[in-house]
Amino acid sequence: YRIGDVIRVTHFYSQTPCFEFIGRAGIMSDLVGEKLTEPFVKKVIQGLPLSGSRFQMLAPVTHEKRPYYVLLVDHLPDDMKTYADTLDDLLQESHRYRSARLLGQVEKAEVVLNPNAEEMYLDYFCKAGMKRGNIKHRYLFNKPIDALMKMENHANHV
Image 1 (cartoon, rainbow, N blue to C red):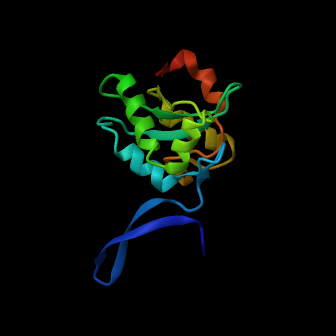
Image 2: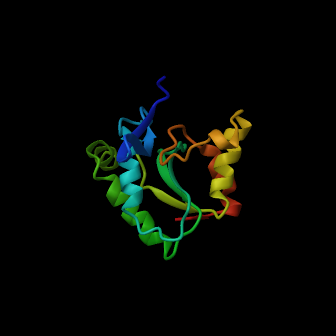
Image 3: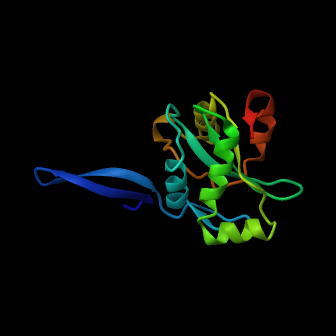
């Protein structure tokens, strides 16, 4: 049956294929026409030097002025300002995102550091009725997470 997982066969054991989970098909964020897909976002996140981090997820935030994206991480080895600049540069490799930035439709991406990021992510889905063992890590959360801004007292922003 089709569950929407994107996988890659990495090798065979005897005649049985072994695979790697790539992501979910059809996950895309589109606030103003920027159309960020999960495979693209995963590539962007993997392009950041995030050694020591176990959890990273990009999410849209709607804002009264202009929407923007945040990269939620549980650990950063260095200066967060550098990460925010690099993140936005990498996101601009997407033509549509770059256009949205140049037109002023989307603000510069931010980085939010919270050591409890993974736990908050799991809690979100558990409250929605999912079992912890069924929750897969996403690199892109495609719904605006304005509630994230309520965590400002518990997180560092750049």
